[in-house]
Image (tube, rainbow, N blue to C red; front, side, top):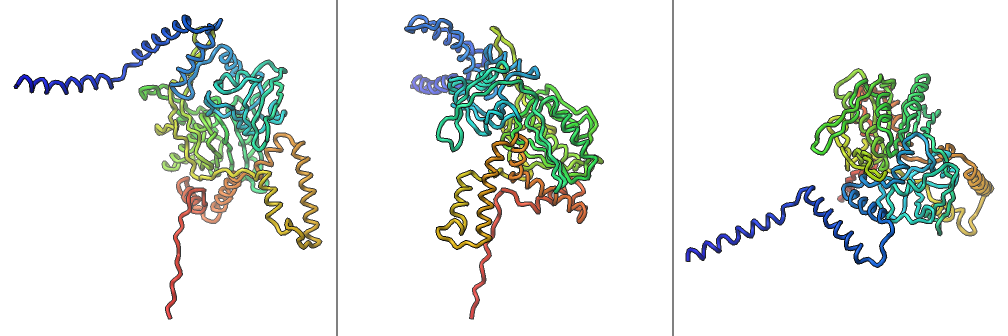
Length: 498
């Protein structure tokens, strides 16, 4: 009887042990060894059973390796010889390409490559490519299943050669076929404007190239010779670029030897710190508004986030060097990872995520992005359909047999003439002029201008409200209504009693 009870007692213990062993995950080395064994087994079975063996299995192996590496994270991947060669060429300063800024969130399963913007006066800009166009074919090859590196490698080539792309365009009934002549893509210049009516400087930076620091420094030095109210730095759609350039730009604003960013490895161990190495040149009494959006990524986020954090810290420390930096727009992309290109055999390479970026204060932007103090979502200009609807149905003069006056007739004639002029001018305008037109309708830019004007009025009427950044932020947020939900409390009228 006792023996029977002992057997029943030990059976659950053995069952628990077996379940525990089943749940225990193998180490990376163990799973890699088992996986390579299965891979070799499959390759051997293909050689025995498949009815038609490929002459060269190299491309199949490359795709298999890339699938494995892509499982690690969205930014790691395998670079076959051609793509690796193109990356080396693209980092050498100039290369033959079509001049586009692409959506860096694309996955190999996506059937298209979204164009975020075109390089000013570049091949795509001159060929009529537009932002938000989607490339579905490159040289008659579908993009589905193609990595972004492979797609960009196919777009690049010898200057003067042509490449045909097929494009999906919003509100266009059919595919748009465009032939683009490749050219040397020079470093894109930043775009700068002075707004004389508002006394505000505006500079747009779409990527961090070698000459970006010099261009912004030149603008800041020029601005010292004029009386102006503030600066707007536009980092929207800035997907990154050279980290050392972003660090140099930070150095124009913050005290020398300030921490910009640091990298940490797998075990949260510090790898490297990056500090500024120059004296700032910015007038610290004027507001600086940085425009950001969901396509502000990597080095763009580091620049915006670092300036925001240093501005907060200098204000809290009551430092002599105050910095009035505020962020406006929408949350940034959230790419805070470091990629390293590691050459491997057969002239190929691995692009591996090896570390994460951390802003001052041990703040990671990875997967989080940066939240602006002033949330303003971008309102796109009216579509042609909405313009037509408003013109055809939103007015008395659009109604059949409406009563018209001499003034209304002249207004209608003037509008028709303006429409013709606008269509003609749009066909002839160069890139910078088209940018001017877009900025005139930009609600985020207009909100930044309004906040700078409020700040300027406060400097005269109530300077005690904006003595440091903390006070200035509270003051501006108490006045400005952003895109967050507005609280409403119903007020009911009292019922009168007789």
